[in-house]
Image (cartoon, rainbow, N blue to C red; front, side, top):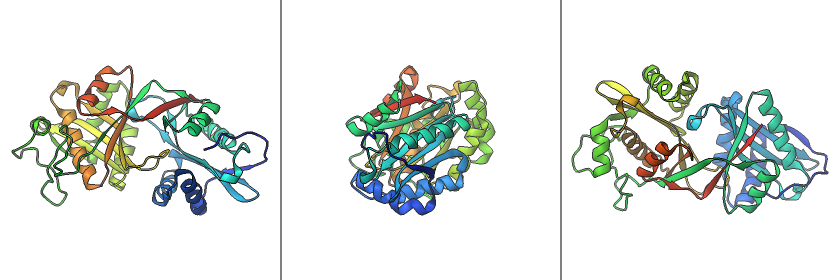
Length: 336
């Protein structure tokens, strides 16, 4: 996106479903490829959960000139602040340098204030000079976070990452049986640690209990909402629970995504993970990641990512031990 300069009179309004073709066209010109499915999914999500999405259009005499799309963060990555994640922003080539990008962000900031959002968050490729320049112009700073990622090895692949190498499971859902023989060290740790399966509403009370023990806060509404999202569309959100000794001892939630600021491959963002403190250091987290990798292979998602605060050395160590490495994308934050 090219940095805007003020001066033109433009109209700001909510983004509408009828804007889809023009948004796709502008996005394709910026990214060099059409991403209709991704944009359509973003607009559909906003219609299903309007309280969690802020999407605005800027118009000039020629019609739709640009757009901005953001989603509310309520507890992802262990945060306590209510945030707004900026996911897409773009201007039509002929409408740039007219202040539209700034006006779109100002509309987003007003929406954030009305909805008690305290901060904006986003990410960008470190080589995307134009996007970095625009983020700086509207007041973003580097966040004290690191984005970590790793490739998801296809199930049964002979070229698998040694940290996660899973056979295709048996049964109607192709579940992986961690009790099967012939596993590598990562699988043996996962197999011996816990039974991992999709989260169900019956697990909610125990998961909220574990989460409260870890965070010191009751995030029942957040976890229930993310579980409902997974139950509604398992291709978008994956939620897993780990059971050991007849009890829920850990959980993981991830969101499959493609498109945020120039992603070139399907990505699953691990935004919530927790282990019962009484079962720490017993391979529960590795078991959850192993099952997630199996599920993602079935969805043809090729990469996992997460965001960890640089001060959280224990969590950083866990993900790095599981095979995650620093991403080529940078994390940014701006207070409302």
